[in-house]
Length: 151
Image 1 (tube, rainbow, N blue to C red):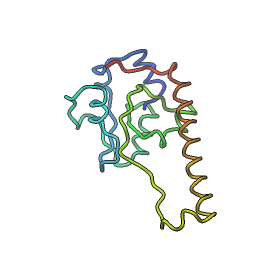
Image 2: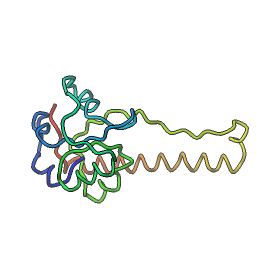
Image 3: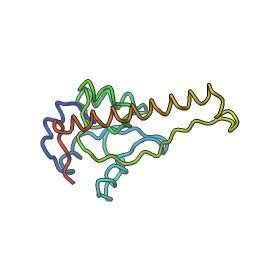
Image 4: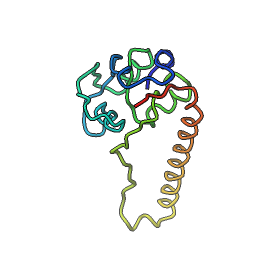
């Protein structure tokens, strides 16, 4: 993710070596945080060495830096959907490593058949499907306006 201004500077099809000189905005942390190492691996480049760029101890701070044109950040789609929709952030690649994060509804098995619990499970599942479809639609719609990194 980066600002539209930075994306226009990189457009239309920058090569990976074109983006490395730009600040890679990182968020160190646990295994649930997207990393540049995983992104480069998904792009087919095993040789990336973690440690380049600026580190933020908060995803929100890294995304603010990206919005202000200071570099390129990684984030889960659920965290940046609104920013993509409003145009303050754009995707510069369709490379999207799978997230190690899963969400589960957990409770006693006997409760899943209670009407209120079933209604909540159905609502939560429906909302997740709607959100993913909306996100996928926005990304598909916006793909013609972003640059796409050439691997």
